[in-house]
Length: 527
Image (cartoon, rainbow, N blue to C red; front, side, top):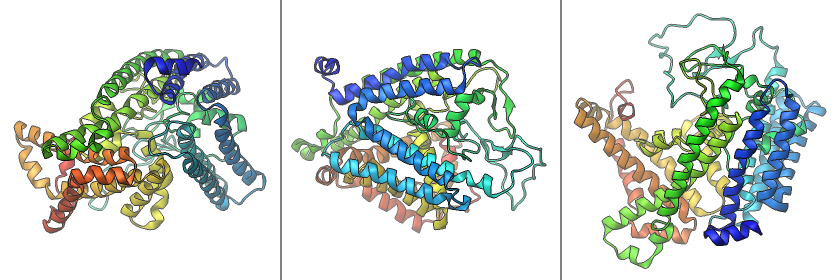
């Protein structure tokens, strides 16, 4: 009743308001969670509190539909536990993971089938889609634990650093780069792997049911993400998360040497700044939606407007479709930092804590991106890490990176729902990325020449930014329109310019040879 009255008073649809209130509730919950991050409190107590808080917020949003998340969590855990109790051979654990994949994905798709409409609906399927990925990853991590059972453990425990090299073991001589061995990849702020996904994420044994509930219902991430591994959650409960970290570009883990209580002080400031950014984005979204909703491109006058005006309106409508996600992700970023879960090591000074471990969006980097590759690196970050780890890399048996990428994007399109707009957007993303990859190589000599002067660099960056955002928002418009009829009407009015442009680019790159692979990368020049 209270939420209904608030919705009437504010003009915000009740499902949207309920989701917003549930996401905001993670902040006071985070204050409780951070207060328990002390050696005096046991891991089981911390987990029990997480379960109670998570179920309370989930119940507020889902109501009686909470039964669906409980059913999928319980079934996934039971499948893995049965595999362990029945002593499934280590090499056959993947069969259990496959069963979990099929069950969770099928459950979600059936839910979509019965609850789908011609608009984007906010209901229990919203957090269920997030949970689907989390439970699939959970089962895969347990299946990956078989490698520790099938082989003898190494003499020294090893983890993986940001650059993918082994750490925390005996030092080995670093091989010098040769003509056959390329130099080690330089790790930057944008390319480093967050703590949430770094290292060995496998689970040798199935966690307890209560631990699994705490992981699944964690207050700052159950509703709209971000994704993270159970390995991170377990380190959070045991406080091991705050004990060591791998500095950016380093090979070995080093101790934090800063008390947890001291580390957490800076998380409050980070959460406050992120919360302020979220409010700004949510406010901007409300203003943009007054003028640039997808209904604009479906209005009769849109098709008769001057073509340049149609392009302008379509650009802003596509941007508005994506901007709404930025605000809500910033809210979850703040609550996860406040709880301490997103601790991501220390900055180079060795004292200041980094709280970007579960950031799902780097707002300024996203807004100023000059390539689609940068967009992927800065938008929906943790879902992209999840997709890379649990889908893309596991499709390597296809023998082709493009096929692996196509398989990954196909899954993500269906994961969003059955609306044609999702398939439209992800198919276009695949083609756009391939066109960008080829075009980057073809125009590398031109970019190198232009970048010799400051004015040329500005020209390159502005041009790349305009092309990148135009391609992104063109696809996002289809994503937001959802139905085939709406997409057909809107893009007929735009003369399918984005599709024609990408075909032309691909044809040019096939006709005009680019420099050899050792040449200058245009993408690097625009970053």
